Amino acid sequence: MFDSLSTKLDKAFQVLKGHGKITEINVAETLKEVRRALLDADVNFKIAKDFTNSVKEKALGQDVLTSLQPGQLLVKIVKDELTTLMGSEAAGINLQSKPSVILMSGLQGSGKTTFSGKLALYLKNKKSKRPLLVAADVYRPAAIDQLEVVGTQIGVPVFTDREQQNPVAIAQAALTQAKKDNHDIVIIDTAGRLAVDQVLMEEIKAIHEAVTPDETLFVVDAMTGQDAVNTAKAFNDLLNFDGVVLTKLDGDTRGGAALSIRSVVEKPIKFIGTGEKMEALDVFYPDRMADRILGMGDVVSLVERAQEQFDEEQARLINKKIAQNQFGFDDFLTQIQQVKKMGNMKDLMGMIPGAGKMLKDVDIDDDAFKHIEAIIGSMTPQERSTPKLLNHSRKQRIAKGSGRSLEEVNQMIKQFAQMSKMMKMMKSGKGRQMMQLFQGGLRP
Image (cartoon, rainbow, N blue to C red):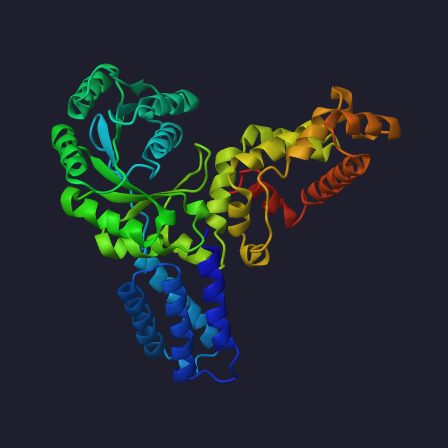
């Protein structure tokens, strides 16, 4: 996420650090590189220019040139300006009505249907809501099927009417059904087009007028950069939506849409899609994103994800096993599976301060744990609970059963032993808090 922009901004600040004395000239040179990095990230030229002018004005106004740590102060000013550019604070979602209606809009291929499912799951699990998904795309043959598959996957009912070709009538009927079945959220997945056209806009406006949604969200593919911003403006001019959803942000190395869209449409980015899994949905926090862009990580979000996935009772039992020297391969496997639920591995690494920079050229495979799971899966229950049983012949059988080499089996067992030892050491002293953090017990 934003790898290219982060790298170029880091190079821009290196220009400043390379000088023995900070002057207005080399500050201007640094900001010129910052502007170039923004333009390369597909940020609107006027926004990039206004941004660097604002940073320069504040930098000179805060006596950056005479500061004891001028480089750090300039980075802080850039961070604050990035936060402001993206919206300053996280924007909430309006769920006051009973039921609350959320209307999805956007072009075909932007990820509306998938996001509708992700939002339904988010509201169901994190807000304790009873959502109803509505299939109001009557043009794309597979649209209804896709939403039904998504609904089944996340355990949320889907309202459909395959005989009805009027999306307004479908939306109204769904609202009536939601009240009858006591749903408190109705999420309407509408049709998209390959480009903005009058038919699309009239249709979405008609649905909007018929159901008076509490929230109208514009869903856009972040990877389309400046095109995403232009499309958002066209929709907002006619629909006046409430907020933006950026999908596929995990694949966007530039970041132009995230940095430009707030200024152009004057509407907040409310959610971001960070992966293909249905759980890969995050509330958009401008300050946290600014930290990540500048390579400062995002520990708060990392802790929150850990808290969501790690069961406190399970953590208590594992702590007890560690203390009694009974931590086995089944427990190790459980920990791995919980880490996998937290999201894309490279994305998680990017949340650790400094790690993103170190790993920018490293390809971290999301299937990196597969060989470990295969090896543990080839063990007997006794071997998993009592690692000391693993002699040479058992290891050979495990290697054959898992399709891995004996060397890989030995390496995994060695890593397990090292981790067990480290976890036991972390049970005491300063390591306790870090242990709690990754078991979901530490509150930010």
